[in-house]
Picture (cartoon, rainbow, N blue to C red):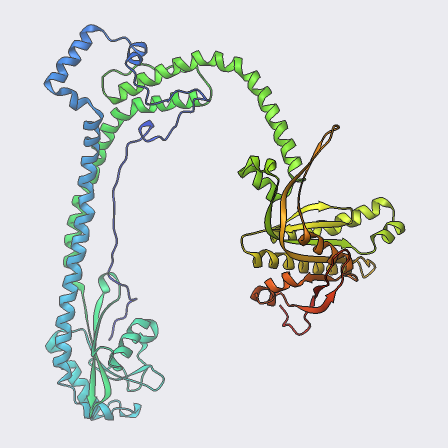
Length: 585
């Protein structure tokens, strides 16, 4: 009978052992000094030793003598660290040896696989392809041809010392059925049940049948039940008529490897126990002073300057660290009086700073973002006046605001304007626009940038977003709100910067853009009506071919040349409106 086990790949993994010093040497308990300019743990001035602890002349002489004889090394942190890391290093050798034996196991399994493939080659020569090709009906189970094939498979099992020899055939559905087996336990056309339970064996059989590798040897199963399986094609006239499956359990190899592994693990366990004992003994002697120092550092970090710590005997790094800490505590106590006296003055200064920050924060909302950025980068920009800059200017105004003001209370009108303009701010800022001027029911918005077509496109996108937001607000109000926004946009060169007005009573500074570009944008807004957006020919020229403008789903209607107020020549004007033929976004 074919024994079946869950397929699992040979184990592989890594085991790493590491160790590190514990306590203050690793920074696990950093000491805060509350602003005092002294380092907690590296204070190693010569006078720190004398102030921290008194060393008798005889002890100094004895230390010099030990240094001369070389015994100081064995009392140093370096030697102690070596004493800790050496057992850990020995322990690390155990898993490395374990992985070595795992490789040995893999090699032995590979050798067994090669041997099994040779068996499959020789076994295939004993199979009669013609006989295998006619065993296709269940009714032929137990007939002479079938029994003859069973006997052949049984001889293969006995002669080659394999666990199973099975002949199977692939059906039209891609699954395999039995033709014969060496134990004669299955009838012809009975499904190969192991394929249903373990898809890996089915894939292996299909690969062999489809000649994706003439043989397929693979390790299946788990633990002590791992077995190797090989599939060999049986062909007749160039056509595959059956598949010979031979498997052999790997208990012998597994048991030998397990015994060797058990010995290795036992040795590793002994090393772990021994190393742990040595580590505990050495680290306890090494770390006790550091633990006490850490506790004192925690008290100091909590603000307790009266912390006390006893001197540590010796001249190694731990003793010097302890003395440095004691010296630092003394200096902190001396500095406490100065800190307390300066505390009140610092509080008053912080209050003034907070007041200035609050004032700056409140005033920042009154200044365009580009102006704030400019002044942060170049504080002297305000004194240099205006410079010629390529910009796009957008004016917007509420249509019929005078009539609305007469029909509403002043506070109601103010709330209405705030509601609409608040919705517009996000669209303006998202498109890198700055509100430079406000006039009750109107705004002047400036768009700048290195790319002339980009800031023109930004202005158009902001205008479209404003018109769409206005429409949504009207719909949300049930159509009762008849407010309309008229917009004019123009691009070109303008004088951009600060304008300073000086008088006896005081000075006034504004940031704006002036010139014909600004005037034309204002005139376009002035002639717009019914909630329309008018764009100059220059702005339209910059954005017309831009794919981002096409994607907005709006179109530009050529209004021809219009004569505008106080402008000598007529100007070609374009009107933006939703494109009804554009695909829905």
